[in-house]
Length: 206
Length: 195
Image (cartoon, rainbow over all chains, first blue to last red; front, side, top):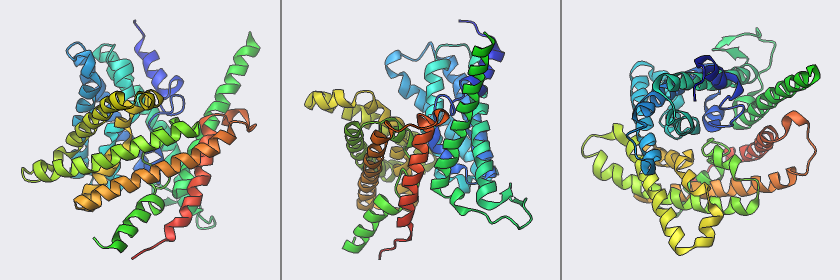
């Protein structure tokens, strides 16, 4: 199975977007998107872990016996997550503190295990790296969007800067749990609406 | 542990800090297995059991091996391995003892490994500095909270299946919005303080 790298990359970013289409990794998106800054930190961590673990698993794919593959993948992923966790605590302590338990929980983020099982275990190292990067950026795109919307509506700020000049009364519900569900629900609905319209357009041309 | 502190911990874990609706742990199985009430109940019970057992085991591993040898940075790796083997064990025991339950849970059983609620409760127990009894109780009660949210939500979704909603919202988006309303209801508990 030969695919062009561009296609693999675009699949991850849009057509097979891990969050909007495959509905994976929803926990972390809901939990850390109280501000854009947190969302960006989380997306950085996930993209790094996803790309690196995809590469290593792709290298090991012929050595790992089929029966214990899931456990082996989890160990590889947990290793990278620990590295990222320690690096973040050392260089970005404030961010690591506000993301808290959700950094170690990247281990059980379904996106990473799903890509290891569905892609990296069947493809070469370069293709796997591109796939990890594409999927990671697709995830980052959604998490940044949700973080942006929640920060604007819930706090009236972008990355901590006041944007409305005081005449907007922030609706703090959006930085509470209930707001997270609503914003993500509407984001997916928006994607599906655009998708439906594009499909309808294609049908019309035929 | 006094009776008040047991009560406070339990109410806190089940209602005030509900794992699914307040802490956002275990959303994937929450969305995946809530389409029917009976699968929701069996999934909730299995997760509760694994969470309780995982809380106990990870506490032992942390206290007996990791802390004496200054290996706390290995927590994530060790805990996920403990959880993975525990789930495997539960799977084998269930297959021997209760084949009907085993086939009813099917694919969801191995997926408990990647349920972030299980690893989450193990890590939170350590972070909060709970002792053995508190960890066990917290694991059990958080599991009950997961069960409660899952069963309530599956009831909502069973009725929602018949609702006529706009096309783009069908499927997950409307489920997320329903979950949001449930989360709002649970926000009402956040003022609760005991002891």
